[in-house]
Image (cartoon, rainbow, N blue to C red):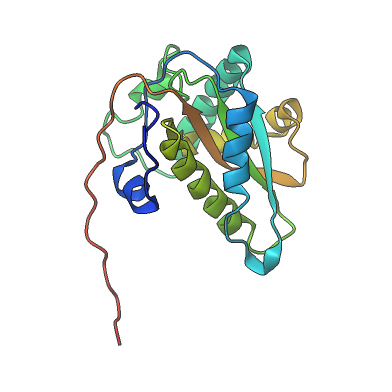
Amino acid sequence: MSKPDVPISVMEAIYQRSSVRSYAPQKLDEATIRTLLDAAVRAPTAIHEEPWQFAIIQDMSALKRISDRAKSFFREEVNRAHLDRGGHGLDHFASPEFNIFYNAGTLIIICGSQTTPFVTADCWLAAENLILAAYSMGLGSCVIGSAVAGINTPELKAELGIPPESSAIAPIIVGVASGETAPTPRRRAKILAWK
């Protein structure tokens, strides 16, 4: 995806953006990251707590270490929860060549202090703002939920500067997409009540 020539509406971003899993090997510059973070912190926040914190990782060797660690933890989680029902969905997580960050040059981890009751919701709202802002800037993004358990180990949190009382909630890769990714269809909203 390239930078739009004209501004796009919020509705266009919602309907057209998709998760990108192939990136050009370049890092985002500081101004771009700060713009994304500024958009993230404009998210709604319960009782105005603003619990979000951010860790930005652009060192490729660190990204490789995190990927390797996270793959192992994710496989253990899936096996422990019996989520792999005999399919081949986890095969690529066993491959040493597979990078869960799809070779993106920038990982933004949205973290939150677990001292507030709405931290998870607030951080996910910030994540959505960041993702939509990235799309409006012509960038690709993808939430990497399979990295959460690995990032939240005491060793990786210490390496990444995440305080012990905080947790990684939404790891998001952001960068220049390599190729086009079409939006995927969604089911219609399931309405439980309309009174």
